[in-house]
Image (cartoon, rainbow, N blue to C red):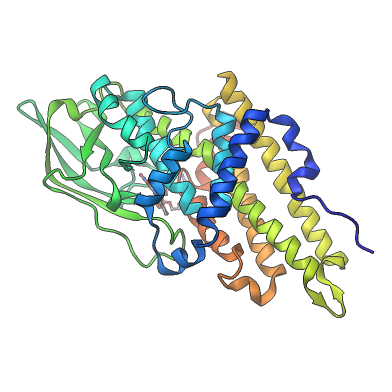
Length: 392
Ligand SMILES: Cc1cc2nc3c(=O)[nH]c(=O)nc-3n(C[C@H](O)[C@H](O)[C@H](O)COP(=O)(O)OP(=O)(O)OC[C@H]3O[C@@H](n4cnc5c(N)ncnc54)[C@H](O)[C@@H]3O)c2cc1C
């Protein structure tokens, strides 16, 4: 005899009780968009290494998720928890989709919203919130990822203009961006610049041959004597704390997003195991399978409870950015473990694009690396616990 099962492992945890009605509605709207617009196509996009980003950006703009946690300038001004749960649903579709939204809202838009002049905000934010303009965020360089303080990209004054030279690497949305927020070394320290994509000397060749985040655009940014007017600089960001505060915003979305990918893997695997007959019984009826599913469900639920706690702290205005490291480290590490275990439960079927599991597992390899690798977040946590910095 089989007993009724919850529609989602998270229903069993009762997490819905921690979220208000408006947030639940917003989350359901994003889930509906992903079901309708992403799930039927994403395996093909992934296989072809392609994302119809421009069309999707407009639709995501209409859905209201681009820069949704920001106030004014056409942004929705939702709570942090609502933004997190939207990331959860988007990444349940594909990490590439969530990356598009994170980079747009939490990196490019946030940088302009937090550090830009009124003129920069008026010029870019309403169009970016509507998905009519796409942004990217250039911090990482070929030789400086975890240690961006070493960056070589330079901006020098020439009269009242700025002239930028350098190369940025692994930049999400780079080749399709209308505007790039680029961080560069100046005589006054690290500063941010708003670079419209058509500026002479600015090119963004796409990085190909990726085995992860294939439904996402990743690019180099090449700046070869890119001349910008004085007002292209973000006036309020001085030093590395500027780009690092943008990364904190994007990391926050990943705390929830990675668990969305894990949830999609686990639900797919539970359904598969309940229908797959092995030695005349459902795979789900074996103790060995149930031990795996129980452990994965537990980690998923614990991860979301931590994410919701971090979200509540952010909404209360009391979140210490080092607490985001706890969530990023835990969510991505557990999500990738869940995706790999689910792949094994699916057997040979698990290696195909007929199921989302290996696609999520491969995507999560990138998510493990960007926005601070697991080791970087472990070192942040280690520093909090011991008082010693072990970065160098
Ligand atoms: C798909 C994708 C999209 C991306 N999008 C963007 C983007 O939009 N904008 C952007 O600016 N960047 C982006 N990145 C870059 C990303 O942020 C960097 O890859 C990341 O910061 C790691 O840098 P790295 O790859 O140079 O690795 P490295 O910094 O070279 O690290 C290599 C290894 O060394 C470890 N390590 C580093 N420091 C220490 C230490 N002190 N002690 C012990 N181990 C250490 C790391 O954990 C890692 O395992 C993206 C990356 C990917 C893969």
